[in-house]
Structure formats: C-alpha cells, structure tokens
Length: 353
Image 1 (cartoon, one colour):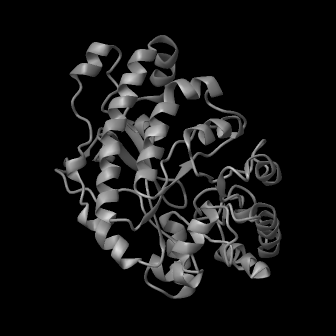
Image 2: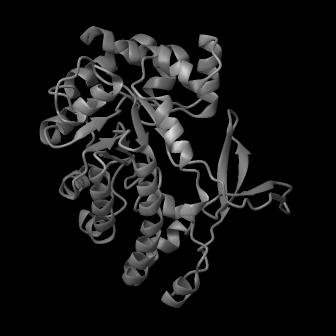
C-alpha cells in the first residue's frame, strides 16, 4: 500500500498492511530531530520515521501585512492574517505566541457585529501553493485544515465574552460563527479545487474539552456548532475527502454528536477520563476512525523508550482492529520529548508488520 492508500483504508475501516502514522511537532522538537538524524528538513525526518501524512493547515498568506511595532513593554507586536495581535514570549524552551488584542473584542451587540467588516479574506491566500504541495507528495495522504467552527474564532473574539454571550445573546453568537464559517468554507473549497482530488483529509481545529469535562453540554454543542460542522463535513465529502475532527480534552459525550454530523475521525485522543482507548474502540470504533493517543503530557517527556513502546503497542492492539486507527501522539511533540521516545513510538509498529 502507498501511504495514501493506507490512511484511506483506516478511514474505511479496512485492515491496512500496517498501521498508518502521522506526526506534528513544535519547531524545537523538529530541530532536535533534524540534529539527531543529521538531516536538513522535516520531510527527511518524516521519511526516516515512515510517516504517512503530509500537512498544510492553510495556504501561505499573500495579503497585505500590517507592520510590526513595539509596545510600551518593549515587546515586538505582530499582527496575524486573521487580525489578532500577539507577542512572542520565551517559556524556557521556546517562544510561544500570546494574543494581546482581538479584532472583534469590542463587539457586544448585533449592531456592533453588523458594523464589523475586518474578516479574513479568502483572496489573501496562495492556492497555487496547495497544488505544488500535493504534487510534491503524490504518494502521501494530504491533510489540510485549521479553522473550524469554534476554536480559532476565539483568536478573533475574547473567550470570556463569548461564553457570556452564549447564555445572554445566542442569536449574536450564531451570527458571528456563521459569518466566520463563510470565510473558512470558501478558503477550504478553494484548497480542494486547487488540490484537484489529491487532498485526503481535512482537520478543523476545535478544542471542545478541558482535561476533566466538556466546555459545553452536548445540547449546547448541538445548538452552536453542529450546523457548521455538518457544512464542513458535506464540503469534505463533496471532494472525496474525510473529515477528521480535532479536539483535545474530555470530549467523549459529544462523540455521538460528531458521528451524527458525519465526522469520519477524531483526534488526538488525550489521556484523560472518558477517553480510554479500549472503551472508545468498543463503543465507537465501527463508526469513527481514531488518531493519536500516545500521551505527550507524562509518558513521552518523562517515560523511557521501553515504556513508550509498550504503551504504543497496547494502543495499536486495541485501536487498530479492522482499521479505524492512525498512530500518533496525543498532541504535537513538544521540545521536552526525547527523540529516543519519538523513535520508540513509531518503532512500536514493527511488532504488527
């Protein structure tokens, strides 16, 4: 099987020749892997580890870039293409982006919303880059996607205000989410058109859970997010693409909701209560494909390679029954994960080949 065939088999709940694998990592982790393997590029690292996917979240931005400036704290302030302003802060290992201003933070009424016009523009992205990316990775499973019905929107609008308005002004929240959906639906359709049938997966990014519970009840999830999720699923299926829902956290209660919306997969399967791989596979494994599950919070940064290998083997044994599983970590690899543990995760496949 090619990587493309292998990943598609997993989503079709067919047994592939080996468990397919994906990976994402922060820059610090990529740098460590490139140094360890003595290579220059991320693609070379993924070739060594036999990774089946290649990922373009959204196309490169080619619109007008707002100039950086220095704020009163002496920090360089950058402006994202979606409008939010952010600074980079050192956490002891790497720089993280911290949003300090959101373009819609003043919106409190329907009148404020109707007067707001600074939405991201689908014209400001390079769709030829999508074609080049697909042509470069013809035998790999191509995954796109970042904006989804919820999470990325909270870079444009403050979370606390958003949650208050969900209770106080539901029509306003729905209007904002629907207008935001107009943007990413157009963005993704243009990506699918540019990919010309080569794109296999779309993964919208929406963290609906904390480490102990959902952020919303399943009924509230349906009220605010189901409609636009269904639209995205339908768009993906229109282009022969699978819909992979991203959500960290304890999201088990909305897995039936996602299935009802037509979602084909769920990732990254964080190691929290309710997301145990055996019960997920037992209760939902014939309806949805799972990805991830190898713990990045404790096991991967602090465990031994042998401990990582044993846990990964257990997850593969449990999840990769009649397909329905893609191997990967429970979040992106962070800079605190030893390269030896990353190797152990992917080497665990060899027991099943």
